[in-house]
Length: 101
Image (cartoon, rainbow, N blue to C red):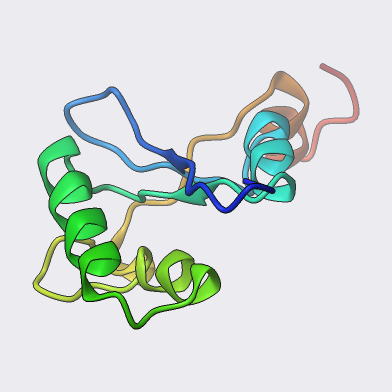
């Protein structure tokens, strides 16, 4: 990332989305400058990166920002995605009002 190379995190799942800030690993990747592919397919990611880099008039940060913007319906808007599952027993218990795991 520091050398101007875009690193893009994608999901290996058939459905779902990359949620960079939800888990500790995603937070670390986000802090390192990794860009989320959200719910794009690998084909959509490769086409979008090729298009954005091929334009030649975009700065590094503009390309990174545009990866999260739906240009032709390749990214589902964040408000249309299902909420992430609770990631730990503590979160599930605290949601139920319990003080123990």
